[in-house]
Length: 376
Ligand SMILES: Nc1ncnc2c1ncn2[C@@H]1O[C@H](COP(=O)(O)OP(=O)(O)O)[C@@H](O)[C@H]1O
Ligand SMILES: [Mg+2]
Image 1 (cartoon, protein in one colour):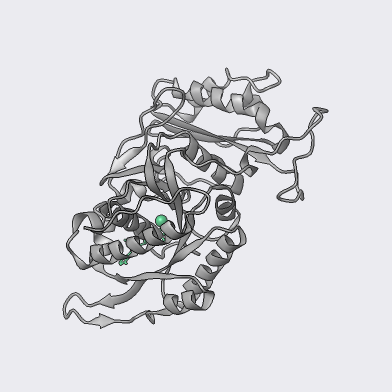
Image 2 (cartoon, rainbow, N blue to C red):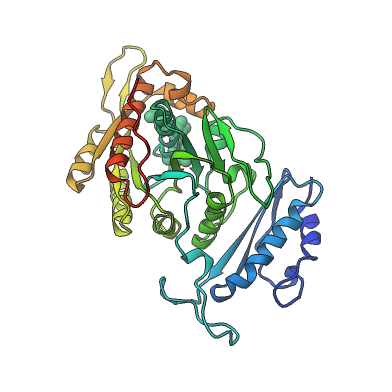
């Protein structure tokens, strides 16, 4: 397998816009090379991003052509000058006359064949966002929709594990990637490109750059709905995604506890601020059903998310119990909706999915709403 040193050697042949090798420019991030998967980013001043885009492409092609490299992803990040306001045009560089908006600040076009992109977000990690995203996607699939999952949780990509998808995306012509598939879902995750256990420091613009590539350089095909498993939280990276990806709507996942609810509220505020319709809140780990006696225990003060949704004027989409079957299937890559389709949890997720589908039909906005299929 190619090492970091091999990659740097190959990159020495790639020229920056002024003709010097990019390895000497100080603009490369640390190169992550693990198990044949390579990732790094190039950070340049926001104003010169367009000149660097061919360099990014060339760097990616050079690495992909190396023996011992299975996949490569190179992100190009435009950095605003310190203190520059978020929406301001980049300062002109080197007498070029006019400024270019950095790549990261333009709205990103969704894949052409995708009717509706829905973000699944949470105010913090560990509330079951990914588990909910995957089972919601499967619920929508069960309603007859063609569904994709984009794992945008680049801090902790979980779709390879949750859907038990191994291997790497095939490269098609022209630098395009073929998405992976699992349980009838079309799936893309940074986890297919970068080893899951590779710790990476991501800044806001880098997240968007990686995500733009997963949106634009992957052959998603025709989808009724794309579920985006968002990075947890409401920081810069999340706001950038909410702002720039053409979302048809957002779903917030929260546990019933007070603290999680404060975070959920921040999530609601974030999407409201950028005019993304809130499809609703899902209460996860809502109550506990004792596997022995079958009795229901409201150990976390069940119902908090419903009350909070009402208070915020956001639809409540449903509650999912804390249940061992959900955890075990999820953690084993056998999501409950797919593997226990006749069980109570699958039914719960399908009901939530139907509400999401109906809300999308009503709020399709600028993008076409997915076709409505009557549940069998
Ligand atoms: N409703 C649930 N019942 C039981 N365990 C759950 C439930 N939802 C999620 N989990 C478990 O909680 C942990 C965190 O869930 P995950 O979906 O990875 O959260 P997040 O994406 O918000 O970090 C996982 O082990 C998952 O299996
Ligand atoms: Mg997750």
